[in-house]
Image 1 (cartoon, helix red, strand yellow):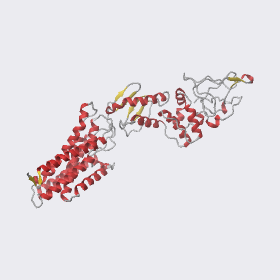
Image 2: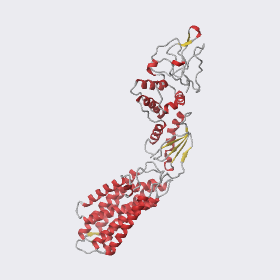
Image 3: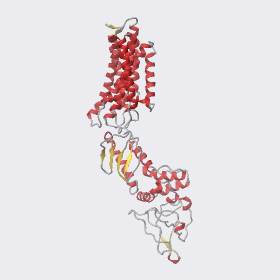
Image 4: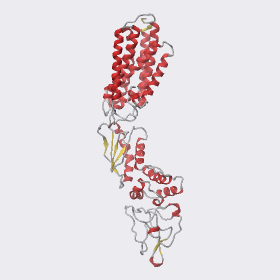
Length: 495
């Protein structure tokens, strides 16, 4: 069996095969965790492969440190030429890059077979390969300089800790680590220029470390000069990386849209979520119809854009298509309709309307007035609730909802019925549209014979039906009609 510096060729082949298999498995698992669920876009594949370097890089560093440790022990006391010194680390780089290419190929199989949005970023793949080469060279140098049994695992853990810290810095330091930045937004796209600058920096640093090590072990001035040139290249790359500005605005894209029953438009890579989004927002659109927030079009926006509902348009955020994505988008949009109210009482009334818009059970709340309001509002028909929101949308948006908007509150509902109709100045309960046609019941001025007030929703302590038939009127002295049961109210006017 042929020996190469004390290491058999069969042993090297087996180690390389095991390393490729391990890196492929780790790379696929890591990339799968980075993939944006449900997104069919080339940018998603590239971002996932680059993100897998956080785990595959330390594994490559540990493998390179192990080979360097074995190699140094085998070559102890021998002189090395430049090629002989660089042959082993370059072979390791080729092995780990082969595993990177295999990971890209596996992830791209589905992408090639389906209609994917966007384009494949070769600059991004090049940056990923440069980053993986840097991990390998760091591990090689560490294993050669510190020939101890604990060096390989320590090198892998150190690489993981340092590069994870750089990637999570969210400042200038995260640009030095191979990565795209998280969370990744499809609307922002992948900048080929930024990837190119990162590749220069990573390759320059890799070459500087490898040639500097080679100059140390071979003691050749030419190799040292090349290492200094690599340092200058790395410095140029750093300056380009740090001065590269992030795009100020998202890229223009051609939306994928569903036109019925309302228009829903999303990023082409998320077109699989159109049906679910349409089902969630159609109900919301019907409940907001006739209000200033009415819309007929739903449009996905970049994650860093603030949601500002406008007439006819509902902007939404959809970071991914994981389970419940449509409900999350609807919840965020509904929350943007009206800010939280400063007081507990006002915010409780707001939450009742919010829960109805979201299609959730109405919250009772800790206060009696909230419990009464929820009971009163639940007694209205769906049509009456929509008409109610049309009348009082401005109060809902500006935190001016009160018990008077919900049947007057429990205290008002407990008032004993009186044969005398209250005057408009003493009535503080707002009416609702009772009939399915969407028009208020006819009313006449107080004191007019035959006049009767519009009915109100049923609540605790009241006996008038919600949207149903009126109670039989009783004629009092003077021709004035009164309700047979329950307190009688007259509207104070319409807002």
